[in-house]
Image (cartoon, rainbow, N blue to C red):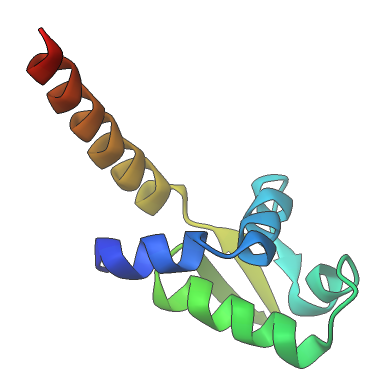
Length: 93
């Protein structure tokens, strides 16, 4: 997945809250939707954006879809950001 899609997904506060929830463990779409005062369709769209950015993975369990955090993409993004910060420090010395 591209860094651009990752940053786009992370730019939205609702999506960041969803990632915080999934940090605690896998949840179904219904469980996630129950934590927000917005429609289920809006949560579904947020989950689709997170999935497109590979920040979450989904698994079907019967009729339910269970989402879990894909921390490896977050780690790659963090490493990229730290590398930028290191370059900035080098320029000031």
